[in-house]
Figure 1 (cartoon, helix red, strand yellow):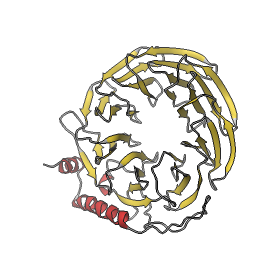
Figure 2: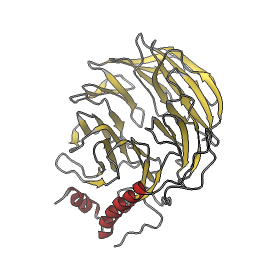
Figure 3: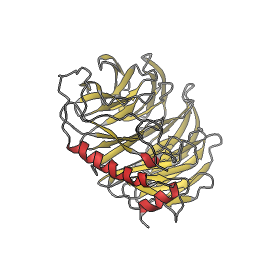
Figure 4: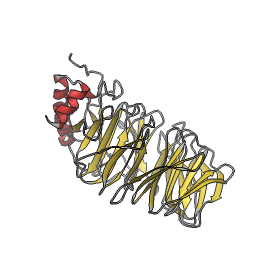
Length: 412
C-alpha cells in the first residue's frame, strides 16, 4: 500500500479526495505557467485589481475531517522583479500577509488575493503586524525600528531600538511588545505602538543569540551561546538560569507557558518555569534542533530538528519519541502544526511538502499525503491561526496558497 493510500485509509478519504490531489497538481502547474498581469506602479504602488489567477475563497479550516478536500487557492506574485522573501508576517485577523523582499515591503489581501500595496522596505529585514492591524513594524540589521502604515505602506515613524542589535527579536502578537537582543548582552523591550521603551535588562555578559516571550507576556527567556536565563522583564528580575552543553540556536515557550525549550546543536532541553527543573533532554545529532523547535498548540507534541538530523516528534505526556519523520530531504526544513494540533505540515528546499495525520502517528504507523506543489524550492510555510490557509513561500518569490474552497463538496 502506498503512503498516500495509507493516509487516505486512515482519514476515510473518498474517491473525490484522490481527484482533489490530482486537481491540486494540475491547478498549481497551470498557475506556475500562467501570465502575471500586475504592473509596476513605482516605489509605492496603488492597490491592484488584477491577479495572476482567480483567487478562491477559503470556506472552512483545514482539519482532519476536511483535509481530503484541499486544493490550490491561488498564487501571490511580487509586483516587481521577484526575489527571495526575507521575512513574512500575518495580520492578527489572518486577512493580510506582509513580506519583505530584497527591495520592497509587499502586502496582500488573503481574502481576494489582491496586492494592497508595495513600497520600499527602508532596509528592514524583519517584519511584524501590530495587534490592531493598523501598522507594520520593521527592524533593520542596525537595530532601527520602522513604523509603516498597514494600509498605504507609508513610513510614519522610526526609533532607535538597540545600539548593539544582534539581529535577535521576539514579538508578542497580542500585546505588541517587541524584545530586542544585543551583542552586548543587553535586552531592550519596546511598545512600538506607543513608541515607548518599556525595559532595559543587562541580561548576559555575552551576545544574545535567542529570545522568546511567554504566551501571557509575563516572562522573557534570553540565551547566549550556552546559557538561558528567565526574566520577569517588567521588574528586570531573573527567575531561573540554565546552562547547556551545546550551542543554543532557538528558544520557545509551551502554549501554557509552563515550559521553556532550547534548541541546541545536540538536541533540545525543556525546563519547568516554576521550579527550574529540567523536564526532558532530547538528544539529536547532527545539528540537533537548530532549525525547527515548536510545541503543538494543544501542548501534546514537541517537534525539533535540523537540515542534517531531520525532524523528530515527541510526546510531552511521557517524553517518548513518537516518530522520526522519514524521507525529509533538502535544506531549510520547515514544520507547522494545525491550530487544532491534529495535522502537521512539513516542507523543505529541494524536497517535498507533506501533510501528516497526528491522531494515529507512531513509530511504526506514519500517515501522510504529499502536496504536489509546482516547486521543490520551498523555504517556509505558514498556517493561518484560523486554520483556513496554508501558505508556501518559494525561494524564487512566489507564495502558493492551499485551502478548501467554498465550492468544495465531498462525495459520500
